Image (tube, rainbow, N blue to C red; front, side):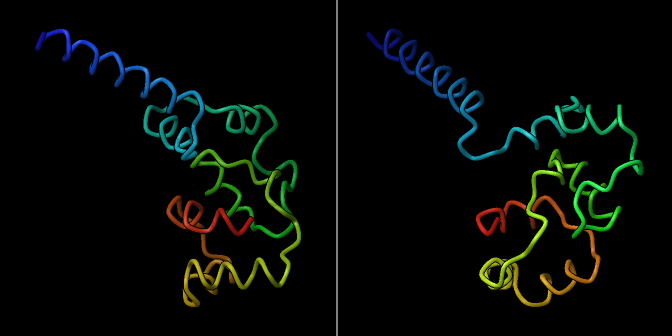
Amino acid sequence: MFFISLGVLFFLLIIAGVYLYVADPYEIKPLIHLLTNQPTASTTATASVGKNEVDKNSLLSPAQEEALEKIGIDPAVLPTEITPAMEKCFYEKLGATRANEIKNGSEPTASDYFTARACL
């Protein structure tokens, strides 16, 4: 009976892991791809087009775009206009100091993105 219980528990853990990987409810797949050095769809498209050929987001500097691409985020899907409500949310989530640093051209980190992604 003990080994049957362990087998069922192990099976349920495997099913939960597969679900979390496929459904990606916590949006961690870009980090998994980054850690395993597997290119994601956005980084593959970037490599084929070239880094400086197209400005993907008019609000971001090339360094900021490159930093986002490194963590698996496509800058083209981010908003090209920041509303006052979005700006207020960024300041609340990131703090005034960090939000001002990013606004002035500092490269966003993965932590910054995942902290403030609800604002987008």
